[in-house]
Image 1 (cartoon, rainbow, N blue to C red):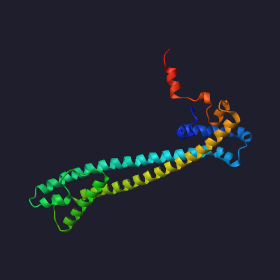
Image 2: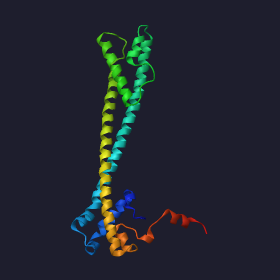
Image 3: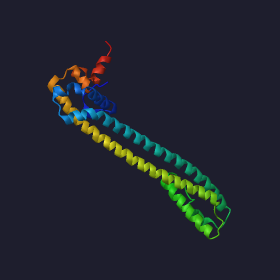
Image 4: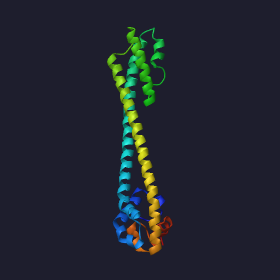
Amino acid sequence: MLIHNKFTKDNDLERTERLISIFNHIDDYSSEFGLAADKITWAHNAYNIWHAAVINADADQAEGEGAYMALRIAEQSGAKFYCKAKALLKAILSGRGDSDELFEEYGLKGKSARGYKRLIAAIDVWKGTHDRLVSEGDDRVLPDTIVAKMVEHRAELDELWHKAIDEKTEAREARRVKKELFDRDTKMLAYLFALCKLHWGIQEPKLMGLGFVQKSAIWTFKKKEEEEVPE
């Protein structure tokens, strides 16, 4: 239920309720108000256009959040696999007295990589070192199947990261479109409300039929607080 006429402060539900009311009742008063054809067209179409914008923005927001959730899960999975592979490789190198420099080259010193950017970089360094040693016939490497699995994690992370960025961009654009539509409709609501006040005043119950609130029905926090004070 609408409780104010502050159009710029509308939430999505309030804006939707106003536009539905206008859609349902504008034809009852368009002649009385002498509305121009473009204003009538807006009144007939505003709700459907707004509804589509809200649905699109909400859907893109949800898809963006889902994409980032999938990326987070893949990061956790990739980090766990990296840690296990790192422990195995360190065990292999620790049994060799000639491997000190490889700890540095493999990137095994310090904390294990976590997060998209660090995992991608760590796997690239590891794969480069692995390929070099294999080409030289050096056996201080993990089995190819393990390295291949790590590369699969990298490919998945890269794909999910780009998807998350794309979804974020789409969600931002949908919010921009929705905001511009909100602002345009706000101006039309202000125009229509001014007409209503000119023809009816501010206490006419018919205001509710066009998505507005008569002055005596406007709800305020102060009024609510006063009503809640015990006698």
